[in-house]
Length: 601
Image 1 (cartoon, rainbow, N blue to C red):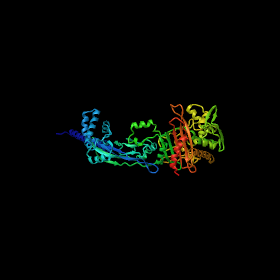
Image 2 (image 1 turned 30 degrees about the horizontal axis):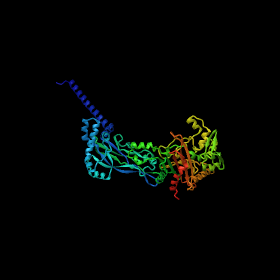
Image 3 (image 1 turned 45 degrees about the vertical axis):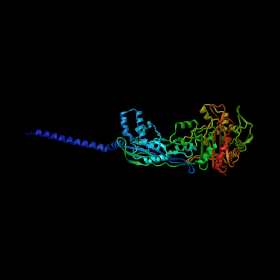
Image 4 (image 1 turned 120 degrees about the vertical axis):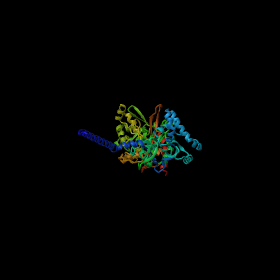
């Protein structure tokens, strides 16, 4: 007989068990709900990271053209042999489990690939590897999803025979890659620049950002236009997301976005004019810049010594880099070389003299061949003197004594301010990377701050003829020539994109005509075969370490035609051999060459 108390105890136990089961079920349902819905994205991400891989490959690089559409930098196809290293996993993994020595693993992988390729080499002849055993193993361990390029530059015949002879199951495949090539070799090398291979993930690609990513190397601009406009030239990367096995082998592509080619960049440069300048300068160290005054476009920019751009791609060998470094050829003398101005400063100095009223068109001075400034004698290049010489003749003959005398009168601050008025204290803004941004524009305050020394009248005398502490670039000088040709204080050169700038009137027309007339008269001395031309030559002294005597920088700036200026130019030459050296004598024949090309009539 069951007692009532016992039945109640059993009933309570049953209800407790029922409640416990229901509670556990609810807890289980809650956990499942939490895992499935609240943490669903988290576990999906973990699954994707384990099962999916992202592959990024670059778009084809855009071309660089000159002003008439002639190709300066283009993509050229090369024929390559690749190997899929995951094919050898079943042979290689057992070996690695037994042998952990890295050098043995490298040798084993090398042997597996070499033996597999042997049957093709018997038919086609030896196929040289462009990777070593260390690179093979490194690629196997880090980028096994990507095919490894064994050889590039296969002949079309070998490429075609391999294409027909290789099956889809074969570990070797052939393909075409596009590499940068420069049809004109070394011409305009500092302007065009070159490219190098980089593994870089485009941060703008959001799809699959959390996945393990494999990146094909792309070409990146290293200098010149290639670097300045890299974002435009490189195009957009393509992306593929693949489902892989736990062992890392591809199964299927689950998402893809194709790459797009980069844009074409067209320069203001005229490559034929550039070649004329290259030939005219020859083997001399120096630079030439020619600009279109009406548009601002740079028609030619040459810096010598240079280098053949095709020697730097697809990779820059160490010995090539060192050879270019030893010759000082990396330097773009037009935008990065800093030099004293010498007598090409005299138009700026005369501008200050006329502006301040120290001289006018009728002023004159007797040049005896030297000028005493304090107790120090400053010589004219004409040791016999020019005799009585007026303002225009002083510019025509480039008389040092005239500028010593009146330069000391006007003072260093006026000369400094005149250079600043013509923007010599700032870069030109040319659309090339690494233009020099700091220049020597001397003044008493500048000397005190730089050297802790007091300014002297002798400093002013040197300053007035472009010697002393001046340091500017050829690009700044051609900017001045272009601006002054139209009686303006500024000019903004460009290669691809023009940018706005402000340019006020430089001088009253009467004063401007005085300087211009002197430059026209100078052109008749240096380039008598040409009419309607204005120039100013200069020879600046520099001290070279290891040499007791001064060496020189030769200059010639100018513009033409005088009555309606179209082009301005600057030639800069470095003295390399001891002896007599005058800027006008050295630079005038070079100017004659490109002026004949520009103005054949």
